[in-house]
Length: 238
Image 1 (cartoon, rainbow, N blue to C red):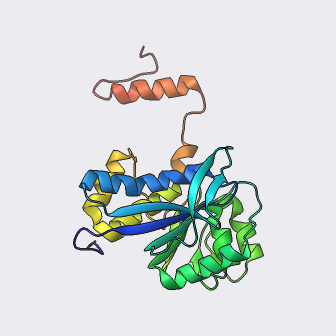
Image 2: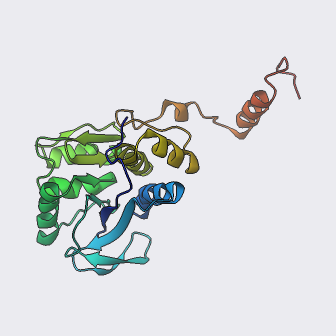
């Protein structure tokens, strides 16, 4: 895949945090940080933003400092999710998201951040996804959204949505690939010790997890077998 930008250029990313935001999605932001460090080029600038700026408390109880929505000039705007099961979007947030989809190159959500995009009408008549545990709620609450509940991430025009937890990292790596090319994305994925780069259309549920050992004894046997593939193995092996 060819890169979007042929040379060094600063891409500003505004990451929206709301009260009670889920901190795990910050892992996706690490992807952009590593793209800078590993290429030794300042491709990305990350700004945490909120409606009024200042401290915003996370789901773990600690706060992060943010700039206000007045901070502009973003190439990409991303909004993360919350784990409370409620998605209170202020009028200012709704207005900001509607403006972002018109005035930035891309807008994205991670995990239940899709609910905020849906409230703003950004996902109307678009394909979208979210964490599988909340996908049916998203579809029921916002019937205009074409929810695909078992996808890692989905790109529909300028709007990107991802499933929950680690899927935000997959989405971010795909953005880096789109921006800087496959080689940079691969280097970043390796540094993040990603076992496998998941494509957007891949299922959220891993069948490999269902094959995990159910007991410690089975796990020990599997480890032993993998370490001794060069020798005949029997049930009597030590």
